[in-house]
Image (tube, rainbow, N blue to C red):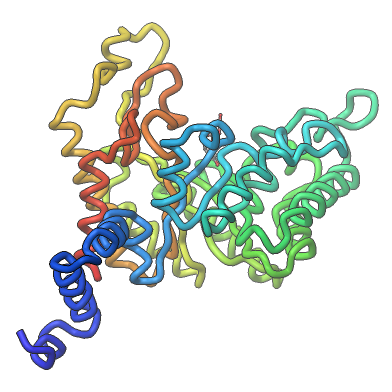
Length: 379
Ligand code: XIL
């Protein structure tokens, strides 16, 4: 096909892909073959390479333990554009006791990301979980009062955000503040400060780094009541004139729930606030919920590996999710997986889960190829 007809029939982007392919083919016949092929093949077979073409980027949660494992750092350093510290910047790690900060683990992750030319999403500043009990305690065993809690929150945010100023692209300022029924979740933060604790956290974060993006992050947003609560909260922050740049939808999903329709509705609704949506902790839990006394074979059905049929089902689920993301490309700014490989996932908890795109040997699964295919076709 001549260049003119290629332009007319396929548009400029496809032409570019064709020219790139032609370059590789030509290079393959010449002495430059090895380098040209290796470079092009790795760009085409990484999430990063497949997505960068249309300005989106991929993230992954990385834990301190991953940094000493070569296959983990190879994956984290090549496939992604962004890193979220899995636990290293949570309150109980970074400020384990009052005013005493432990930056080592967070620094290691930031250094890793920066040296691989990847951005960092800070996770997280204010949450009811993974926060030491001391934070909420006042004198004589009484709960800390509003002023004490606000002072602790402000000091924490100033110190942590201040430390990473210019090196962290955006922060999850408040995590999981809404309850399943859409009300403001009852937490020690809310009990002690009042309903405006969320607004205060956003105010302090803005003050600490006016250039960092600021996000609200939560899960189960496909449930209409909970989603309505999040939308109300976000609109309230906007009405107060506070900076908020995006809504993080954690996206801890299963094979069949939530339905694709529910996921799409949530995306459209959340984006109607005027904010971009980010899938911040994507994984697909394949295990049944394990109540006590459940037969281990039932609770842990894939202990010897994932049967092919399930593997394919997982690949289809991921393809559907990414199909939706591509369809709504203007609404979704990025996607982060909660863990590198099945070996690294928080969803194992003593069982064998298979929720991610790479298996326990950190080899790509059919789901990985399915995602790359969807991204390539979307160009
Ligand atoms: C999880 C981590 O993956 C685990 O290692 C840790 O034990 C508990 O927290 N929502 C969040 C994440 O915002 O911070 C959580 O991460 C998963 C749920």
